[in-house]
Length: 465
Image (cartoon, rainbow, N blue to C red):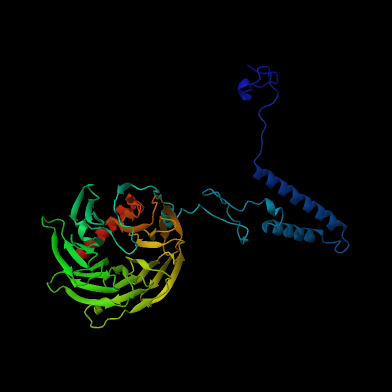
């Protein structure tokens, strides 16, 4: 069936108007913009050529050679076209689809305005890592009644066997992060007035050292029926911090001294360091066991050489006095044993990074809050810090740029303790609000982890050969 205009109905665009009788022509053709621009430029070029021909014919300077002048004019116009001097603002200079960039003509020299590309670059791995999701809510919240709100004490630590030891004044509890079981390791009689001041798991094995307010150090093995192995007592001041170096246990005391104990022998006291004038509240051995870093209430950071443990009059190889408050937060970079991070108290509020190869201060970052603990991530180039007044939160930073990428809030009092899981994905924070919070802040991508494990196994197989 045909319409009045002579076209079939299927040749016409359907209309919503029932009274539409049709017209005598089909759909209108709308050319693309690029073709319109090309036609416009060709027309403009023809007009220029026509005008040039008329001018050349009227020229009195060369009446007998119009063809030569015409050719020169055409060449100039074509050069202008190739140099994007005609209608240059309408040129397309970017191409976002694969394979759509026009080929350059033979002999063409690219102008800065022209860009040829085949495809968009894929985002790099570093960009993808920077966009990872960090949960801002804790995985678990545990009550910690009677957790002491004392800046100078270190009352929580996570073992390589996935067990967290936490001291609640007179009692020491063990929480198995894998099974969720909670056990009481021991209780102190309250009437004596002696309380727990520090806890620290050994790097190898299941040994736990516990410091007390009367200067005692008790050594436990929770896997045994009779858990307590021995008691060591060489000072009368409280032991606020502990650090292991293989079989050597270093203890920081209120007197400012650091005592070293060889837990294998009966005569356990093998040496001491003296350079702090106030209580030692931060103590950490480097991953390679070469350096011992100590921070005290005298705003000083001392770095000691392990070879000086048994020396008669040892002295630190470096003494840093850059902080303006007590230094409790101390951490070594697990990839670089000569890189040390320290954090200052309320009057300082900075994180400082030192290069122990040169003994120089590399960077100082203002955090606007008391710095109580620092930990380096095992999987990312990041660090996490625990803070007190006035913000009472945890911060995750990019390292070494020190760009804050996430705040973890929830604690209502200052965060005094921070410990990392053996897998490196979780941290546990302890606060004066008598709560423990478990954060999954360094979640590892399963695909990346499998690739890493394959590379590791391959390297291991090659080394076995």
